[in-house]
Amino acid sequence: MDPLAGLALDPVRTAAAWVVLAPTRTLVFCGYLAGGVALGTVSGLTPGIHANTFALLLAGVATSVPGPLSFLGAAMLAAGTVHTFLDVVPALALGVPDPAMASSALPGHRLVLEGRGREALRLSALGSGCAVALAAGLAVPVTRVMRVVYPAVRAHLPLVLGGTALALALTESGLRGRVGGALAVGASGALGVLTLDLPAGGLVAAGNMLAPLFAGLFGAPVLLDALTGAGVPEQDSPEVTTPPAAVGALALVGTLGGAAVGYLPGVSSAVAATLALGVVPAAGARGFLVTTSGVNTANTVFALFALVAFGTPRTGVLVAVERAGVGVHLPALLAGVVAGGAAGFVLVVSLGDRYLRAVGRLDYTRLCVGVLALLVLLMVVLAGPTGIGVFAAATLVGLVPVRFGARRANLMGVLLVPLALGV
Image (cartoon, rainbow, N blue to C red; front, side, top):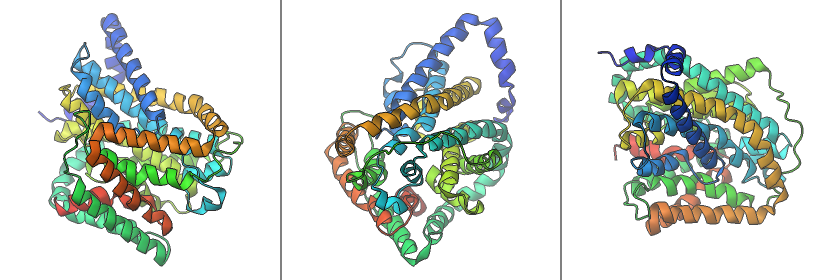
């Protein structure tokens, strides 16, 4: 039987049948979804917690949770989806540099420094929300196409990934930026080759070297650059100044980028958004935010459909679902994604403004030091002493791109290079 046949199910009629024929079971299912939303909210708003890390921790305790495994899988997908909406909140509020460094700041931080942080939150929510709707509509045809072309892509995967890494560096602006991009790709790639397969000696069985690598490459350098920053300034009106048509177009670009992330190993949301924005001239910080958020959330949908079609999990959440023995019950898992998307959209707007205000009132230097200490503690728990060493090395490498005025997306060489080399 064609595994895509089940993808044509009408989720509205399926949900209606559940409500009418099994109201008690529906209430229990909604309770699981609510629990998943709550967990995703906590993880998304906690700095230093990556969605994949959180998912693997969930997988470790999943077998002790009572109830149908399909409900548990839906809750895990809801948690992962909410996380993709809410992780922008601490990303915008923490690591804001001194205004003098605005030119080298992340796109979202530049908006915060301009007093447009509340608008940035809404742009991210719109990008993610539109991506869920667009990806749900495009998932079946895209999956059918990928079933045809993926064998050829797989056969030439080293060339595809190597070309992606090369494109990241070559699309930097100016010679200095291209040199910095190449150094970041090479150094992070070498780090990945040397450390990805090291055994983790943390306190939890789900730990691995991805946690210290990503925290060091992408988390700690941002916080170190922000130690002398003035923190979150007073924020202006939340009005979105980007035209609705432009937001929709950028979300579509992000959704298509999410398809690439969902099917190709080693290609992250930042990489896909960086390359996708090459077709959107003058998108600016707002465009990058919408597109990246769209890629990040659309990936959740496409990766689910890729799991159905190919049997290979492409995200940490789906790896966790597989480890928990949930199985692929598409209607329940898709319901978890949709419920997480709806809740995430509301939560970004309702909690994000408060988060920015709360951080703005705190001593920013102490806050950054505290978050760095939290990252170190997490590395001890997840990866042990070896993880601390990897975290420190990754932090040094993570400082490279900004010093050359290059994008941090080049640091995804940590996965692209080992996968391209087949190690």
